[in-house]
Image (cartoon, rainbow, N blue to C red):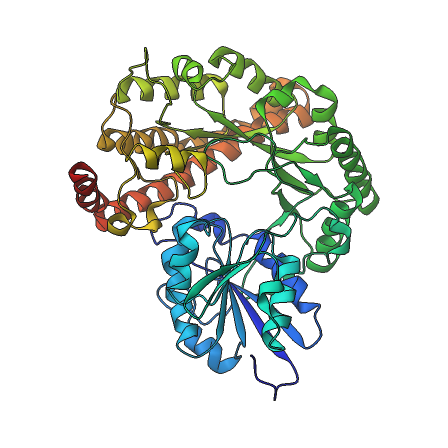
Length: 522
């Protein structure tokens, strides 16, 4: 039970810091995670409760910081929290999450965690490491009932979707039905994110994804809010925070096609009404290139960048993965996105462990050549090459676990589960060292220092290009794409270099040998 003396309570939601070597730390300094903001907003609407969000990856404005993350002891002195929520949506941040939990647990603060990581045995492990309660599934309704139950000493076994220890035994209540009526939820309040400087705002309309990918934790029938709700989110951010850049976090933009097109059209009209162009990025399937009406509506709404999961550019691998598409077809579909004026961010999974490797045997060097050739031919604007991650709770985790191919987590650590490191024994055509090095080579050949000189050339040729094309707008659009990509590739070189330095300093491969030795003994 919380203190009965207080008139108001404070609930602090904490987004744990990425591991120091995570290559996405720079982008994290521009944005935040939407889920924690949703949770804090729901609590902030409760009687007697105030809420705030501390994003350890975005502490840019006078925040109490330490070498890693926030100074939580100082936070408690300045602004004591009565309960804390810990965001476990990213498995790689779990070690830091447990560190934070211990800090608050030692001070007698109620600790609550939630997120995709907490499934199966991870639930009982978390309850043994300083977590009082685990919220399972979507938490906007659950967190309110849980805090109210704790404060009033109610029977918590009546709260759906939680796990806790009672007299040393695990209590796990029935799951709550996924939310479907989003209109009853308050709009996310980003003013609750303290010390952060936000440039890119995450927004959503659809939760869930029907693709049922083996490696993904997002499952279930897509559930959509009405188009006007997403527009209200955007309006609120534009009017109160002067927002311009948005990332639509729906797993697949274009689900519920008719409503998506309607949303794009009302978003287009809103921008005309305020006389201002906004900038949107969305995740979408490659085959949506076959829907010109959708693509046109997206471009008119200023969806300028699409993030596309290509997975692999290797025909033999696509066939072995039961993907009914060939690399040549992917090239033609990508060209359609470019023809509509989209910037394309390509997402790849290198070295995916196949279910059946019969008839497929390709060396790491040959795969690297195929990747480079495809990326050049597709003219992809930016790329992301990740290694497969068997996240807890996924079918991939279960399959590799059954095959005894996952390296010992106790030896290696959850912090390596971010797609930048091999955490399982790859197929026989590659060694783990080759798989690790291949990813670095592909990224390193795309993000390079010599683009610094190309940026200067871009500036010099701009006037001549515009005059030659005799169309200022078309000339500008064509030049801007090249200039923008050259800047991104040059700045990306610094990120890759920093990651490589941290990789060597961290001595990952030495830790890996210890973990692999245990698998071999088994």
